[in-house]
Length: 219
Image (cartoon, rainbow, N blue to C red):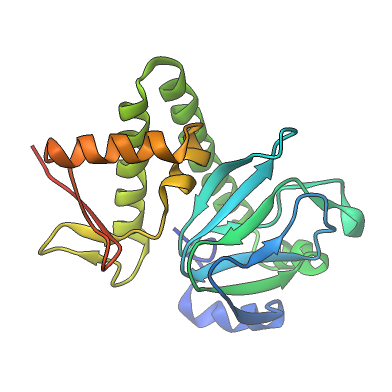
């Protein structure tokens, strides 16, 4: 799923020229806020992050959940060194990121032109997810909204997180809180909790809070 997936292994050395640093972001830490100047682009190496906006009423709306391999930070308003972030980003758990200076992004694409195609593919994938969520919001119940989101994240995590999926229990590590889920689909955390209890009673999901896992029952 990563931007550099198709770069031949023997050519990955040139990447080190462009990478500024790799660093650890503690759980709950804000990486950047909406309106801040965008100096850096990021690849998420390990962990979970969110992209979010703060609405006029002060409430948070989660736009996207980021998993290992996701490339982000280039969705900015404006061109060049004065571009600003159009949303904020925050770690849901301790996460490791690779950072690339915005000023060197064009050179990176020029040296590896197929990265432009790969970036377009990733954007099309994200756009399809966004469109599916819009359609889902227009026609489904709150339970269906949550089920759609859980299944999306379950399948993404199983594919993108190394050692993040337990095949014996069909479960993943799931660091989201009911508030996070509610902020992603427009529900209160109390409403999300009620639906989670309903889904557990029906055997649709199993939540083990002590190990922060989420699993699905297949029918």
